[in-house]
Amino acid sequence: MWEVIIVGGGPAGLSAALILGRCRRDVLLCDSGKPRNGKARWLHGFLTRDGISPAEFRRHAHEQLAAYPNVRTVEGEAVDARCLDGGFEVTFADGQTHATRMLLLATGVKEELPAIEGIDAIYGRSAFHCPYCDGWEQRDQPLAIFGRGRDGFRFALELSAWSNDLVLCTDGPSELSGEQLQRLSEAHIPVSEKPIERLESTDGQLERVVFVGGETLACNALFFKSVFSPGSDLATRLGCNLVEPGVVPTGAYETTNIPGLYVAGDASREVQLTIVAAAEGAKAAFAIHSALLKAEVPKKRSG
Image (cartoon, rainbow, N blue to C red; front, side, top):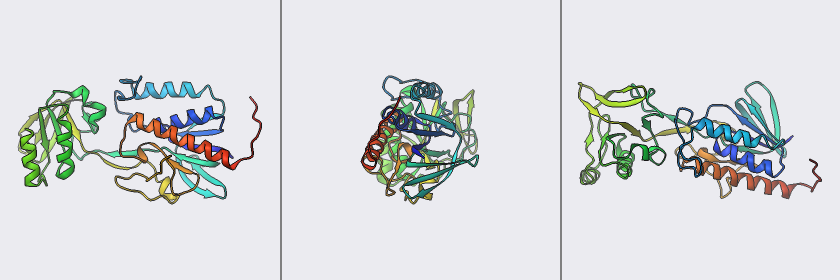
């Protein structure tokens, strides 16, 4: 039986594996190889790693984990999990099962792109969901914002920190109140309710939004308010309840309502920054190690 299984090889899972490895815990890290930011060209906001590519970030992390022989990394997807007496059993896509005393889910979330023709070609290159991650690179450029209602209103005002050349595109009725429309007008953010036909781009660079009827809006990037779904259903299979927008409510140290089960990273918080996910993984590792210490008889370790 493993002491800890970590499901998810993103920043939260990698960070937890490092801390637990240094605590001399026997750790199995399961990485599906499908990172949420796989299409992104860069990773921002992570001190000392600002601007690094996601692939390079992961390579550095795995190189550092290799120094800890008690941490084993396996490629594959965890497809099921169940509670055992004193732990958990995790089933992988290849049919293998592994038992563990503690389980950390760092499976993140899945992003549902808006149903707009052409967005797949620019996602991660000139279509973004997070201005904190990508707003600096698009500063002072003409930007389109996709959204409506309260979320679109707030997102448009938020993006005004990065550019004064903004248009909120609602792709139909804006669902904005008179007060919200007045506030956007005062901020010099026009609202277009014209239905969107497609996005036109070259080599991943957005050039224009094309509306039904042929009218166009020239812009350098599109920011959209994301809709998220859990990256895995393991938490709900184990008995956790989800809260909007599809995240698991956790305690101060990433604990859940299931003893021995922890959730860290984008699956547990609405602040979805890489550095925050890594910090949550470290906090979960601290709590897991402390819980194991309380439950075990001290033993002499070798090596």
